[in-house]
Amino acid sequence: MHRRGFGSVELLAAIAIVGIFAAILLPAVSRAQNAPYVASCQSNLKQLGLVCKMFANESDGGLWPHMRGNCPWQAGTTDPPAGCTNARTAFEFGIDFGQVYPEYLTDPTILVCPGKYHMPGQDPCIYSVKDDGSGTCQYNNYASHVEHSYLFLGYVLDQVDDGDPQVEIPGAGFSAAAQLHEMMEKLRPAMDDDDSTDTILEEDLEEVDAATGNGGATTIRRLREGVERFMITDINNPAAAGRIQSELPVMWGDIRVEQGGKLGYNHEVGGSNVLYMDGHVQFLRGGNGKHPCTIGGGKGGFARFLNWARATYL
Image 1 (tube, one colour):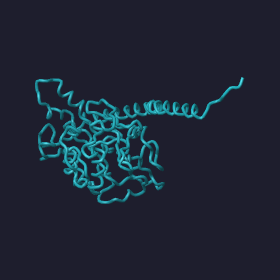
Image 2: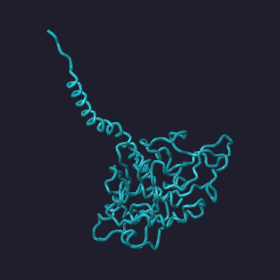
Image 3: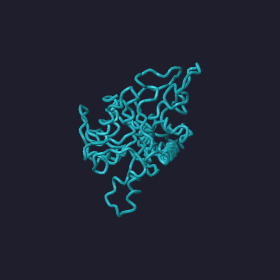
Image 4: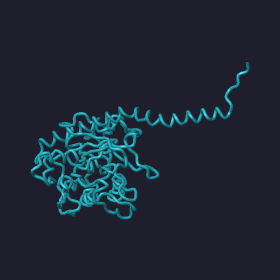
């Protein structure tokens, strides 16, 4: 008996069916492959939250660490420190390494998200300053790129979602949270090469517009334990303080603007892990309208605003 093989029509149909199944299964496979990295990243952020809490317990007024800003070797210069390599000379929107290491942050590798692509030619464990072989580098092993994986601004961000007041960003063609824009304007003097102006990063930002201040006031406050009392509207509600801390984002995975305007995340699943002030961590999908995964107006939002701020202020 003669057996007929697949004809061209049947073969094309089979290929189409395989393609459909692949399109369905590949995203699920990708999510499964990335799940361990997302979980490890969440563990990093939880540990960094504990670092900040421990620091606050021993600081005056319960203050959390402040934003890094300029590196300590940048006093009036853009040159790297003598005898050192891999020393970054740029304003950084990350935690101030010198305040927490080594007393509170004993393992600097938790500053690197496992889902983040490593920069070529740099230490895959931690982007740190290295001695050039001369034995004279006074910043050896000092973290040089603290914003590479996790961003930290050091201020109370309670009006930064897409539903909060927005402002048109000058010359950018999009809008972003008015509170973020006001904060960057106040911090502008610190965004130079002289670390003597970085004392601004340690202070509350006074005399801001009431639409951008914390709790409707005229101050954007530094992160500190007990700061939620300035935002409680019902003093008879004992659960209000805990709820506010659970809603205040303090540190999150980097979101960058890539070529073509596409947003890039630490994790291929397209989202960011966010640490909140109470210590819990939540994964937010990109574009969901909650900080930092905002889109603003005209496809703006936090990531594009920060990209604009770097180009404008630094």
